[in-house]
Length: 62
Image (cartoon, rainbow, N blue to C red; front, side, top):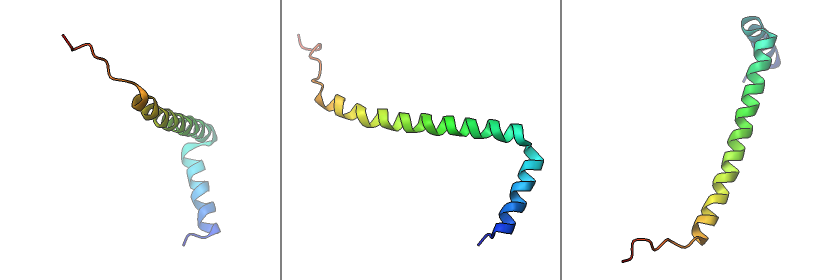
């Protein structure tokens, strides 16, 4: 298991490598991606219901 000391050391190394501004940008981009993913999942869940209720078009009948 990773203890608190190891987590703090990893956090400090990440801060030194990326810097605070870049980490903030990465965090906001990640948050936006998660929001978009959740919205897409909700939209995808709503589509099958509307497709099941929709009647097929009979344009191919002569």
